[in-house]
Length: 350
Image 1 (cartoon, rainbow, N blue to C red):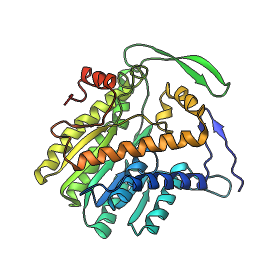
Image 2 (image 1 turned 90 degrees about the vertical axis):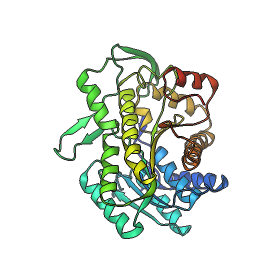
Image 3 (image 1 turned 45 degrees about the vertical axis):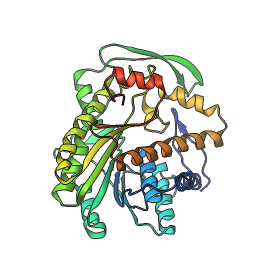
Image 4 (image 1 turned 90 degrees about the horizontal axis):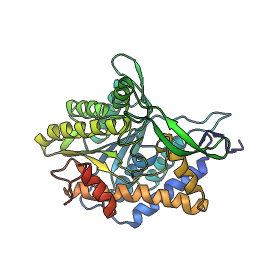
């Protein structure tokens, strides 16, 4: 098969397995160059492990801490006429590299929102690892099929309370335009919380706890982003922000549950990276256009380094027990960003 780029909107719908493997191996090499995570995790479950921060988490724990990893994702394999998804090739490349390094790595391709997927993962943990000491929750999905009713709930990336207008890019016409997004109604707000909030994280942690596969002192982490003034109306002050607030609520509940056996849970506030998931946010395509002005090789390395380095530092802080008592793991940032975070009471200045 000759693979050629096919673009729909602002997303390239074709992927190249060789390029995906090269990207994964560059992240692995970068991780190995950082050294080891002292007393880091050894048996890790990554929920949402095929791209972005989830993939970076799997690479950082495996090649930075020598951890056995199980990755959960929902990706499309290739066919005779179509390429697979980038996440499919990323995961295949990770499994290959882990095997070469003598590291345990198994992947589960399925709907992470379903009870069936949780049961399959729990059985795999019992069979191969016994228990796990770190759970990374890094799902990014626009829809969620409710596990009990089968209802399909869709998120809506919209502002709340007022119309949002911003400069954007129309990639079909190669034009800079003014885009307007109508505010979300209450149903859309609640649906976004249901899909992108902390409910499913809680379901996973409860199922793992009840199955007895969480080790004493087990930790869990989910990821969030605050961003700049430019994205606040559509992100933090919008429906996504409400979902992230629910993620904080879930972290507090999970942390209280894990504390009985010396465990903890946190939301790590990381830097923004350009991924297919983040590019769905209305203002993001213009950022992507800006990054494309860089040479392609340097741009890809820049985003790779940013995601892997952020995860590396978050894990170092998590295992050093520095986050307590805050629910969030704050990474070093510029002073203007720290001031914004303090104003929104997201992370205490310490």
